Length: 291
Ligand code: SF4
Ligand code: SF4
Image (cartoon, rainbow, N blue to C red; front, side, top):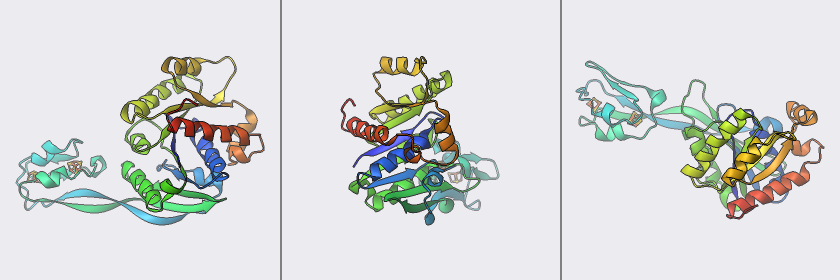
């Protein structure tokens, strides 16, 4: 029962390639759920051939100001850490796309002029394939806040007992901002997928900072598109005492399988054993051991 988050500092590094095959490998050995938290563009279901259905709406709370009660005192704008409120002489404006739904403005308003209203910001979709439990968050078009969708995706898995009855593997959103911080919250370990390029290294450094410094997670590195003689990721991992838990070589046949939507584990390229080993290493990391 290991909670593994697959992340990377940027998109296009092979995060979904690793997450889907690792989940299939885990599902062959026991109960496993794959959560696709790349809510702006979830695509793991396409690789797995899962038929998904909407199972829940994601609703986030946003403040609404009753302009007839508002005295334009400015307190709500002062307490908002996210600059989501502007108090003008005749109107108080809420910028919903900046609002994190913390509720401070409603609690602090001396005139009780603020109430919270629900706004649909996305949906949770669920399905099942080859014994693998699957769920994904999907953001509404025009929505700017993805952390509430990721929180609800985890809640959906928690309410079904998935964290208590098997492995949970999450395909995190790309980048190193709030959505990734939310995805990594509560994980047992993080596998960070990178490429051996200067850009890949730059983004890996940021992702390591998020996983280690914010959540103190054990981290393993997966080098995708690995090439002989290119050692910049190896050198960084040595300096930081980070284990490289898997290498996927830069090979045309891997890219072809990926472009045809075939999980690497199912591509007939001999990746059954490497993903079984990756699963074992992730479990070791989660136990605090050096894989
Ligand atoms: S705190 Fe309340 S009364 Fe003051 S500006 Fe904000 S909404 Fe208006
Ligand atoms: S709920 Fe929080 S984040 Fe949203 S406007 Fe109010 S104080 Fe700002």
